[in-house]
Amino acid sequence: MRSKTTSLKQNLIVWVIAPLSIFTLLLSLFLYFYLQNKVNDFFNKRLYAIAQSIEQSIGVKDEKLFVDFPSFSIDFLSSQDKGVVYYAVQDAHGVVLIGYKNLFKKPIPKAHNKVFYDTVYDGIALKAVSYKTSITSVGKVYNAYITVAESMEERDVNIKDMLSILIGILIFVALFIIAVTFVAVKRGLLPLHSLNAMIQKRDSRDLEPLRFDAPKELEEIVDSINVLLHRSRDTIEYMEHFNADVSHQLRTPIAELKVKLELLYDKNNEDYIALTKLLDNMTHIMEQLLLYAKTNANTINFKHFTMVNLNKFCKNYSKKTALRAYKKGFDYIFQDSDETIEINSDPILLESMLDNIINNALCYAVDDNKNPMGAITLSIQRHEQAIWLCVKDEGKGIDEQSIHHIFDRYYRVDSKKEGTGLGLNIVRQIAILHKAEVLVRNENGLKVAIIFEHQKDNHTI
Image (cartoon, rainbow, N blue to C red; front, side, top):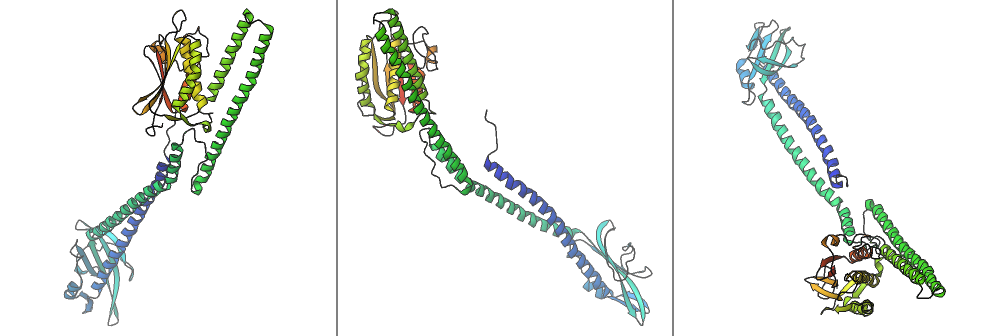
C-alpha cells in the first residue's frame, strides 16, 4: 500500500510560510512595544514642554511665588481637544498656587529632576510629570513644584492608528511574500514537472536516455534515471540472448533424441510412438515457456517492432496454417479487410499469438467423439476506430465461468487434454505488448478477438 506523503511543493510552502508567520508575529510584537515606547516618549516630552511653559509664568511678588494666570492660560493649551489636562503649581510649603489640589502626591523630586508616573485623579487614569524648579529674587531662592497630567485618549488613539497602519503593511507584505512564494515554488518545480511529463509520455518500449536540459539540482536525478534505463536495456538484451541460448541448447539434444529413436525403433513400435509423443510434448512445453519468458513486458526488446501490413501478413500466415487445419479435418477461412491496415508489431510475436489461438481452436472445437466441428476463420474487421483481428471456431464454446479464467497461467478448460495452460496467457501478454485488448465470447462457437485501438489515420493503426 502506498504511504501518504506530502508533496515537495507543500513542504517548500510550509517551510517558507511557517518561519515567515513566526517572524511576522515576533516583528509585530517588537514593533508594538517599540511604537508604544516611541509614542509615550513623544507625549512625555510634550507634557514636559507644557510644564516648562507653566514655569515661564511663575514669578515672585512680596516675597511670595505667584502664577501669571492670563499669560499661562494663553500658552497652556489642552491636548488637541482630545481628553483632559490637569495641572498644579505649589510652593515649598505645599500651598497650591494654581491648578488642582491633591494632584501631586508623589515624593518631591530633587532639583530639576522630572518624574513621569501614572496616577488617577477625579476617577480618570492620567499620565503625569512633576518636577522642581527654583526662582531667585533679590538674592533669595524660591522653590516651586509643577505637575501636569493628561488623560490617555490621545496616546491610545495615536498608538492604535500607528498599529493599524503597521498591521496593514505587515499583512500586505505577508500576502505579497506568500503570493511570491507560491509563484516561486511553482516556477521552481517546473523542471520536475517537465521531467515527469517527459517520463509519463514514454512507455516500456522507449528505453533511450533522457535528453533533458536539467538545472544543476536535477542533473544527478536525470543521470541516475539514464543509468537505470541503460541497465534495463542491458537486462533485456541479456534475457533475449539467454532465451535464444537456452532455446538452442534445448532443441539440439531433443532433436538428437528423435534421431536416435528413429534409428533404434520401428515407427510403428509402441515404445517409439510413446517416446516420440513425449519428446513432442517436451518440445511444446519448452517452446511455450521460452515464448512466455520472451513476451514478458519487462524483458521484451521493442527494437524488433516495425510497421507490418496486417492484410499481407494474415494472407501469408493463412497459407501456412490452412494446411495444418485441413490435416486436422477442419475447414479454414480467411476474411480480409477492404482497407489496408498497418500496425506496429513484431511479426514473430504476432505469428506466435495467432498460433496459440488457432492451436486452442484445433484442440477444443471438437465434438464428443473428438471429430472436428466446422471451420476455423481468421478475419480482419473494423469496429468504429478499432481494428479487430479475430479467430473464430464453430465448436461448442466454453462456459461463462471459464471465460473469466482462460487467460490465467496454467489454466486449462479440460485438464484431460494435453497442454501447458500457457497458450492464452501468452496471447494476452503479446496483445498487451501491442497495446491491444483481448476479447473472448461465445458466438456459435468460440471467438477470440485482438482489438487494436488508437487508429492514427484512415489506413494505419
